[in-house]
Length: 107
Image (cartoon, rainbow, N blue to C red; front, side):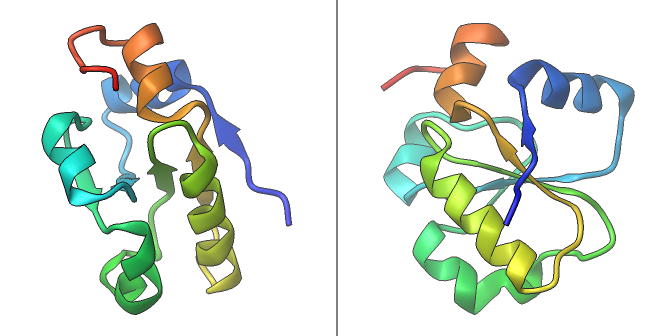
């Protein structure tokens, strides 16, 4: 299954354009408390199978984690669950901090 990757610059561009999408953070609560992207929806990876019905299926989903590995797995799950437009944030929040907003703490 192919999951499209979006670069941090592409996601930032979507935000600047006011594009309607869900930014889904699948990290653990302590990670989100330390650093998160504005406007995110938080569902920890292990809870996605139980809570994916909380996500809209009529807008794109951009899934992110720390480096992009967990989010890729969640994106594949969501695609299989019937969500049509699912993307993985390449490099995760770490890449976001390095490329877009250095104010987002790295860990």
